[in-house]
Image (tube, rainbow, N blue to C red; front, top):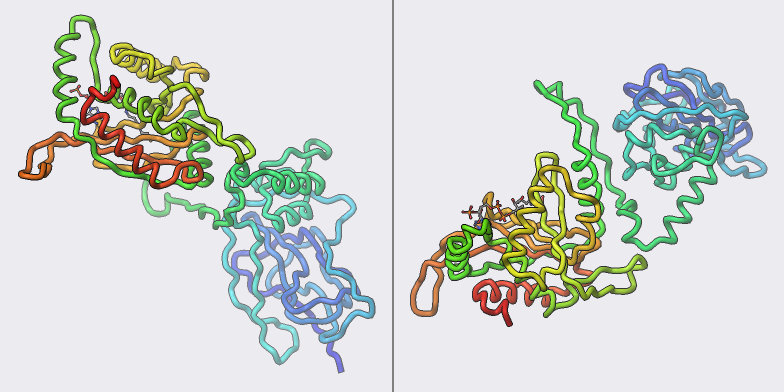
Length: 441
Ligand code: CAO
């Protein structure tokens, strides 16, 4: 004989006195154990309350807008029974849905609780976290959408903050979510910005509980570069090839040239030589001077040699571009490098000054460090990192000789450049710097 069971809200931790924002079942529905019955929402997060038993819903004891706590009866069901006509479990849409704002807080794992229903079988209602693993909860929270649309978006892993609502007052409707998914599926993987990573969101932590803190807003440049670096890091398969260039002779030549050109206001830094060498190396290995087109199916080879230079400014990192480095003298490159560094630090660069690079250089040589892994500055496919040159004992086949060695870190997009070419390019670059006469060939 089947038994009538009251399914109650289990112990849901901090979720005491929470609002019902969705009723997911109707009278007559067949539900399996663990099927969701209602969605509740606190000021921290939304979660679904599952059924403790399988059976047919006979009565629904809550409505949207009600407040429930542990022990509140959600439904009465006939345990073990089956509906005559199997009705699919579906969200019941209220006539006028309230717009809810979901919190940014991390959902807590559900505590294990026992039902108070009369049953011999203890249950462990797993509170199902919403499938929003890779969605930024802060931005999701601010989206203008109804509970059912939010639920739909969570199920599909759609970050509502990325959508423009087509409903009244910009409200996001179900069609918007569907169109977004269709569009995302029709784009090549690289263009989706890694939105399918499926990783856990960062926990939101109140650091003040551990000690004194200060909150500093990120600069506009920090935010912009952060977005691009993040996209490039997650969408480009990076490989970094390390190399050391013997710049003993080049450094001596640089110092001598600096003495000769001092009265003309020209100062050669190692970077100007490296820029010139990079242009020569790109001529020999044209794939380093290319970009993938938007479809990801064609490689665009560039016949110009423009080199971007990462400049550290108080507001963040900017990458102005020196054009036609292959056609310019070392004097012109040095003067231009000085000019763009000043412009960058005085915030006088125009967007066009930072576009059209073939490859970029991130030079930390004036600061220190032995090597690092720079992030490719897309749509470029390679970037050269330069660290601080150091005197080292180098074996010349007969004995150790003191040589000035400059560490190079070449990161490249492995979809475009093979490991062997990466090693060839880095080795060739180091040969060019070891004997600058090769730059003239
Ligand atoms: N090894 C040893 N010394 C080096 C060197 C190297 N690889 N590179 C530069 N130096 C020396 C220079 O020769 C100079 O010394 P002298 O005054 O004795 O000639 C001194 O370090 C300072 O150089 P600099 O850094 O001011 O000049 P630069 O032309 O080498 O670089 C610029 C210019 C704009 C690239 C640099 O100032 C800068 O901003 N670097 C930081 C870039 C950055 O932040 N990258 C990180 C990107 S990823 O977050």
